Length: 281
Image (cartoon, rainbow, N blue to C red):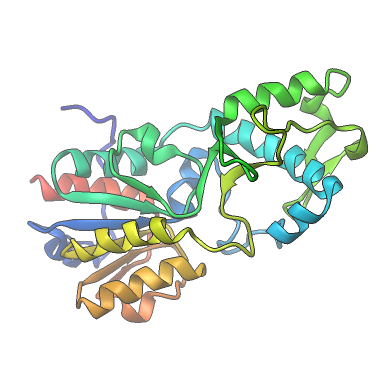
């Protein structure tokens, strides 16, 4: 079966060691932003990334102006996500699952690219930007529908030019007060992209599903994550307690390096593609 994955050049000296640990095992995968950079989605925590001031859930709930500003920036981000395509790293993980090597993917990313690449068992720790949640009644909406409503509600604002990325990872909006943001069509409540904000916790049932996937695996493969976010390190700890080998693939230092049986200092896309080729050779 053709996957569209190009044959990689595998020069990383520890790759062979990692492949031996992965061979004939059930692999749980944890991914971070480094898996999506080859799709044109920036890694905001990687080396050289701009300093960001993320929206907190407290600010979002307390101020309509903060919600307008957030929705403006989120609309810009959503357009970027919607136009992105899965890269060979995503395709490699989908192929590994299809061939029975991977029992599921846990991702810290909110771009939905693992699902679009074809992975069937994806646990999105921090939610997904392609869904919108009403904070009052719990109704969920497709993001595309809410994006269309945002544009309809603001016919005099050219959202293509009025919203611009700022150097600190925030956005500039020409007239944020003039913006009208959608409310829930069921109850009129506040809408929020279905993602975990700074200051929120990963839902307990979502984390338990991720922990169960790790518990059912023989190896934990971490790809493209610096493991700065606590949810990732909690899963590393789960694997350590079960005495699972941990393989970390990331450019730069991660918080999980000291617990890794193998650390591969390389890009996620080429390394995951190399693993696909090696496990079926």
